[in-house]
Image (tube, rainbow, N blue to C red; front, side, top):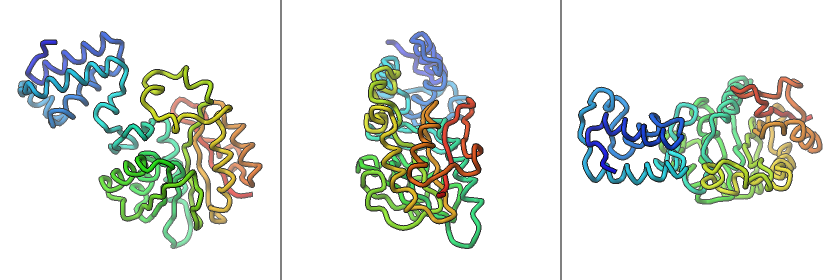
Length: 291
């Protein structure tokens, strides 16, 4: 394709091409790709519309547009996803952080800031992936420290890189393990966003999820709840007396998750107020405490 060489014209051409492919975020995706490849900023695109883009950069951009049209998420193209106001590196071994998960972080920040006493808060993030949850919590609550676990050492490498880039690496320990196996100590807040898609439903997911998010981060077993059974079995022993556990789950799964938690000695904190809704008013996560 004979793409324009001036940045504003190039942006418009990319957006038109992506829009024609049925991509709703065509303008945003085009901007993200151009900035990633050229090193220009958002401000540059507006203030310097006649900035030339070299042939080498145009070729790279054209390749990325082809991949985007084929369904690859823009976050995978540029290796970064925005979450809770910060940019997080992503990789094939990590799930893309989702906007829905921001309500879990907001709730976690509130719980940490509401702690009483002088001791610094401790957070455990089970199955951390990119580290988006625990890193966001530590960035917002600067007195807190954390432990992040994942079964994938590659994912933990991404988490460590994100922690360094966002300035919380001195307060975050990473542990390569299955869920919380071998983790010791007591925590004020235990958080988890485990896989919750039933195995039989994965083939029906949108292609941009099914083909690019790692299967380990999606597949929750026959009923989608295997991870919750494993995580809750250890949770009570990892929580301080006044601590909380905060988990995310899929639409319509909250009753089953509450039942699983109850079998392991955990109940909703503050009754039904422990069920937290996302921006679409879907019950997205729950706060638990030890009975």
